[in-house]
Image (cartoon, rainbow, N blue to C red; front, side):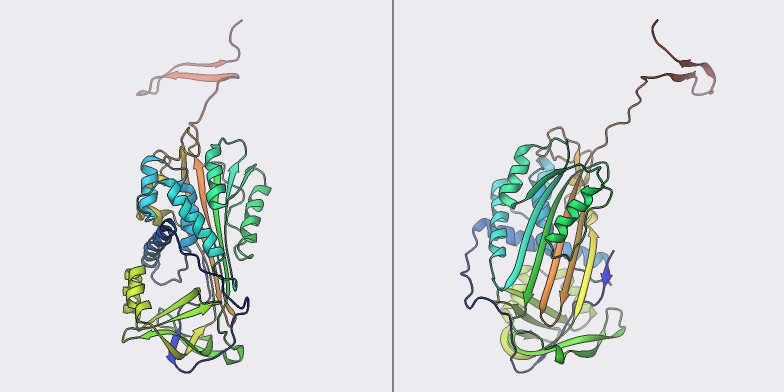
Length: 408
């Protein structure tokens, strides 16, 4: 279910610069160069994210869409450590991870957590992971140890049948998303669920040059259906990266020390919007936007907006090439439990973003719900029982009886 307040679009026009901005340390922290493994995880996260975004924009052409590729890939990256054989291969390919061993992939995630969390002291950026297991369900220690080592995951065993289990997990999610995602696990927890792998991402950044609330005024916004609405339109003058052509305008709006940015792309019309949604990629962004932007004195006008979304990613992930992970009879999560029977029952993704005069606040949580194939129903005749011996075609009943005792 989604609660929609205002779409993520902006209007951009040329002008002159200035404004007060983010506060914090007088000098930015040094930037550490990413290792090859970290670069690969960044590239795979982006590639996967664009494919996932395209799948959702096609499925919901008239709705707001907000996703956190980082959160989704982090949660699935943890699940990847429990997979083997074809399940592992499908998940790796769906996540756009180049051929690499599991240790190299994990090291890339580990480094990315460290780098992003310390990139800009003027921006709050946190990434938290956790693994919650059903009490008394045997999980290989190596799986839990790996998640602790590479994903800094909080690991806890709970009595999932207890009414407090959901609230315990959801309190962790709420605490690690700045209160913006208050719950992601249902209550009661389904009986066949034996594990939750959860990622939480929280971002809070102050614009490098803030908007003056006194300059925010009501303005007209034309939505995707062509309906005109009155919205609070923020406005400010600043010098920033900007490009413009006959089809669209785009601007890069910096937070803090200009290491985190929000790129706004405003298509000329609906046809251009649809084209962009289908073709956006890192390469397209670099070649058509970043490389063409120039520092320009301009005026930026953008609606103040808040969007909250909730999705089940199951069908989208299957369509992106990892159906086996969701198949109760084919999934191979034997690195979690060697007896098999485990599969992903649901991947839930919840997001929040608020953009106002001060800056932006965004949060996401992704839960990978792992279930176990139910054991075949058992009829145990260990107490008095009845029996009927009959012929199936005719329905003729040959014998009927009750067994009240056996033996002497």
